[in-house]
Image (cartoon, rainbow, N blue to C red):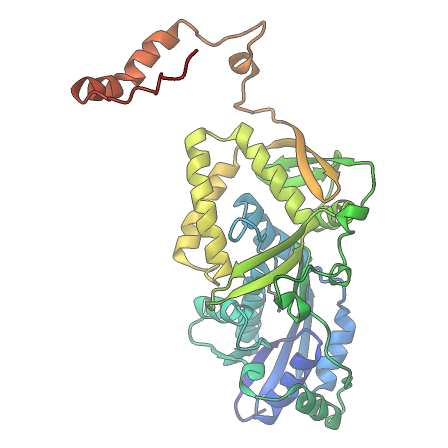
Length: 409
Ligand code: ARG
């Protein structure tokens, strides 16, 4: 038993977290690792387990958490139309509370006194993991070896190799990537200059919209209580549906996002994302709400959606306000069932039709043709009362604002 007790480390299998295992062990910890598949395509759980043990972990947990991630994190975000600054579908931000939850759960099971992650000191993933872990168990210590050890890249590689951990001394990758089912984040390198258009090699889930097929595809998405349950009439589980839609929408170049994002650590950052399924589903879901939700519910929900996205982005996933907003959103979603038809074409996912058994869009009220059920006669009295405050005001404070009539007719 290490003299400092056990620590549970979020382990990706990459160089930073492998060196973290070594480093924490050298500090006197017994390191237990936690690796999760949340739909990042380049994960081999068995290989990660072997590498963790090879790096000195006393135990290595691996999980396929795609289902949990979708049901407990992605779907709540979809129901809330979660988009930070109206643009970013919270891809990475959604995965950190799940990682924190897993670390804390394993710490409880293993009797560990600390949890750890491999984030640097500049990003916001560190904030999210640590704040979420604290929210779940304030007694646990959180360690951030990569933030603390002050290795240069070269020193880190040398340290790894000298301890028998395979590491390539090649020049570092052109971007920093984070990926899960809900999309892919691409940062750093030449993207840091906002004048530079992201090069094609930044993208992996989407084709260039300019080179996308000349013919559109239409996809029908069926929602039950705010959650997508079928694609083109075929019922499928959440992860399967997202994967399929990532392929389909990605093949039309849908979901590329290029933005300047206000980071919670205070600076602006150029962020590139590709989130084909997320963008398609968010467009469809938002549209379905317009025919199923009451006007005032919709207005209030749109306001709370902004708060939901900020809380998620800022690491407040497990927080009292977020719980309250979730309760409101779940109440609204009882009514959001129906099917939306989306056209995927040249980088766009555009809603082209929608229907719902319990829609409150009523054709007989809306129509100007045969079958009109709207009470035209009632309009006169309605307008008289509706306009009463204005009539009262203007008769007390007349407006002298005649238009300029000097122009000849
Ligand atoms: N800016 C995004 C966010 O904060 C992406 C983070 C990506 N993480 C990474 N380690 N590359 O949610």
